[in-house]
Each structure stands twice: as C-alpha cells, then as structure tokens.
Length: 631
Image (cartoon, rainbow, N blue to C red; front, side, top):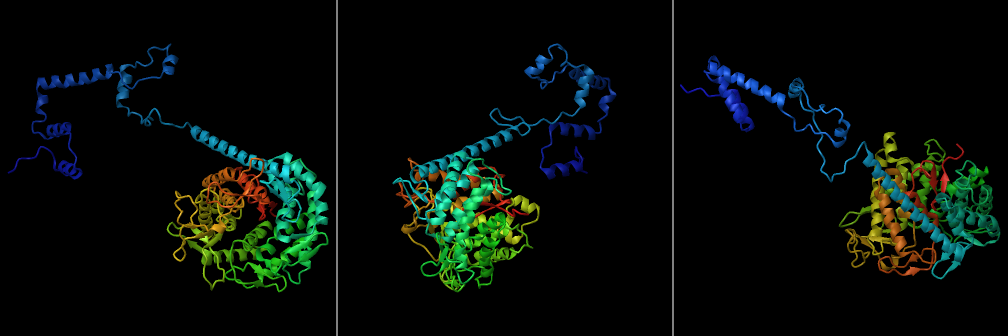
C-alpha cells in the first residue's frame, strides 16, 4: 500500500494543469492541514505560548507600523501645519486600514511625459492647429494682395497682366476680366481696399466697354465676367445677399451691368438655328457668330446655366434662364455612350460631332454643370431639373466603367480618354483640368453636406460611396502630379504608365517621388498656367471629409507657387517647364489665378462656415452662387 501524498489530488491537478510553482508557504500550510498530528501541537503549553506570541506580535506590528505611502505634498504639509497629529492614526484606525482593500491608483507618468487635465492638452493642441491655419490663410491673402498690386500697377483695366514685361494684354475681349474675376475673392478675404478699387472701376468703365467692344467668347465671358458680377452682387448685399463688404458701389451697379452684358450675350442663342448657341458674340451690335469651323464645344454651351438661371432669379426676367436651359433640354434627347458625350456639338444641326470623349478641355464642365444646376434648384428629386441629376449619375457610372484605370507599378487611379469613341483605343492621358472631377464626385455624393452628416442621415447609397472612393483616389493622383515634378507644380497634361503604355526618360524630375515611374510628362505638356482644379477639389474634399491631409497638400502646392511663380515687382507668372529648376517663366498671369486658385486655397484654410457647400454652388470660374435663393 502506497504512502498517502502530503496534499490532495485536487491540488495536483490544478497545479500541474497551470504549470505553476507552488509557493513555500502553500506547501507548509497544506502539509500542516493534512498531517495526522496537525492538532497535537496545540494541546501542549508550548504550543499555546507560541500561538499567543504570534497573536501579540501581529497586534504590535499593526499598532506601531508607519505606512511608507503616507506621504503628503508640500502644499498639504503647509496646509496641515496647525494639526500636527493628523497623520498619526490610533491603533483602531490602523487595524481598520489593514483589512480595507487598498485603492487602485493610476500609473505614474514618467517625468518627461505630457499628460492632459480634463482635455486641456487637447484644447491647447487644437488652438495651435487653428492658429497655424489662420497664419497660412493670411499668407494666401498676402499672395492675392501681391498679385493684385502688380495688376493694378501695370495693367489696370486690361484683361490680364504680363508680370515680367510690366504690361497688360486684352486676350478675353477687353472687358477688364481680371478686375471682375478677382472682385468676389477680395470680398471673401475682406480686403476692402481692393473691393473699392475694383468696384469703382466697374462702375465707371465696364458698362461703356460692354456697349462698344467687339467679339468675345460666350463661354469665357459668361463664367468670368457675368459670373463675377453676379457673385459680387450677392456678396455685397444684393437681394438676400450676405453683405460681406461695405466698400465699392451699391449692389445694383453689379446687377445692372450684368443685365447689360447678358442681354448682348443672348444673341448667341437667338441667332442659332437650333437650341445650341453660337460660340461667339459681337458685343457692340449684339450679334452671334459661329466659331471657325462651325462647331461649338460641348462644355462651353452647357456651362452657362448657373449664371443665366441666377440672373433670372434676381432680375425677375425669365428670358435668361429659358434660353440657357434649352441647351440642357436638347442635350438630354441626344444619344450618349453610357452617359458620356463627344467634346464637340454643332449649333447648325444640334448634333454631337466626332467621337472624342474626354473630361479634359472642351468636355469637362458639361459634367460639372449637370450636377450643379440641379443643386442650384434645391437638389430635389421632384424639381424640373431632376433629369440633370439622372444624366450626371449615368455619366459617372460611364466614367467608372470606361475611363478609370490604374497605373503601374503603384496603382494610381486616373481618368483616361477615348479619342475614337468607346470602340477605339483607350488613351492614358489626363489633363490637369480633369482634376475638377474629384471635387464634383464628392459634392454629388453628399449634396454639399459633410460625409458624416450624409451618413448619419442615411443619404449615401452604394453608388455614392463608390463615387466618394473615386474622388479621394483621384485627388491623390492629382496631388502626385505636383509632387512628382522638380518644382512641385503640376504639368498641363500627364500620361500614365500602364500595362499597354510606357515611355522612358519622361518623368517629372523628382527622383525621390514614390510615383516617379507612374507619371509620364512629355516635353510639350510641361507648362503650368497657375490652374485651380486640384486645389478646388482639395477644398471640396476637406469641407466634406474634414481630413487634414487635403489642407496639407494644398499648403505644399501654395508654397511651390510662392517659390517658383512669384514675381518680385508684383504678380505671378506661368511656367514653361515644371520639371527643371529654375523653371523658365511665361510672361502672363491668368485671371483665374486670382479668381479661382487663390480663392480656393484661402477657403481651404478658412472655417467651413464661410461660403458653405450646402448653401452655395461655385460656377466653373469659382464664383459662388447661392442655392435656391427664392425658396
């Protein structure tokens, strides 16, 4: 018969199962409990004496032991100096402490660790971030003042500044396009001195020029001059406007000048045998003219409606809106390729011409205005413009299906072209102009609300989420078109390395870029015209997603403009080649640099309550127009 173990079978199973070493005290206690002589020691006087000695010893320790953690701060010591015995407890108190479970204390931070107190640290961090963006916003404002100072000094009243030769040039019909394009930017920035200068010039000169000038392009004049006047009318307090400035003339000056101009521009519609207007107008005799070759650009004839609709709204005369909306009503009836359309249309036949499909020049803003004209009317599925939203959705599905590709080796998403229609070869070419699409897709998904608000209201369906994803991917590509070059500024056109297309030694010059092998820039496409499309989309995406990376990208782009395009004597200039340092400069500052590029950068760094996207739509020249003003 085997000897019994000195502990139970239960203990063996438990300890072996957990692979735990039993402590020495546990072994002694267990042996003591299971021993056959476990009570014998208490039957003798020695045992009793030892037991009593143990009890008294424990009691003594309780009464005399001073806890090492009873440490008070300097302030506590000073505060308790009149109660010297306050930290010396009596025996009963110490006995009570012995049986009370010690409180759980938070871990102590190392001396160099930064803690927060009720969110104070977070508040300080947020304050510092806000301060940084206020400073950066001011830098953009300073850039606008510098650009305006050069224009005012050397080219006041001309369409554009030639900043290197210190002259002005009239490339847009001689209506002082920079003055009107820049006006609402100055209003938004709160630069009353510029508002007064531009407003006074308009009041004293523009109506006379409109009545006496010759040929102008319908599209360019509408988006820059008519759009600029109407936005200035609203921002200066016209109708139910914002009244952002008290400088310059009364709002009615802008409205009356806009009506004078629009009355003459209407001849492009009324002279055409179809609903498609001619491309040009002779202002002094109010006559429409077809472009050389007879064709109009699809984008140009379909990018007039925001401006003419708003003019009808504030003037009470529906003739402007009726003529402009005839174009959209007619295009609705024409055949399309999954919602996509060729870039030319004939005002003589009313039909599309050719098969070239692209979202760059001559095609871009058609898709933009499909969405924005619907948004302008209140974004209702029951409105008489709801067909435009349906056309927009169909077109974006077509974009995703037919035009979206990814580069190799790094998978940048880009929008290509179909020069010979859907049955022809795909071209991996993307104009910088296409970068507008990122912001348009995001705007179409949320209807101007933030993404968080739209999701909370269950407004985003699967298609909207797909478009948001494409918007963010495309914005990344557009930003990399900047960062891949030596100057940090994008070329006018880029090609992309795909499985079917590759060219050697045509990178952007920035060898440290991760995407240097994905983006191809041909010598003839390396110029930069100070274009706004990428910063436009960064502005919209930041407003919708609240992701700070879009602000950071915008700041990097602005710094590159400051470094390479700023002219010391005033103004900014275009560049010949963004892949070389120093880049050769072009002697021209486009009107849209003040009207769009700097405006979008400023609003990117401004609070989102300024010109909110659910209250305004921006025309394709960045002039904000209120949504559903009369409702």
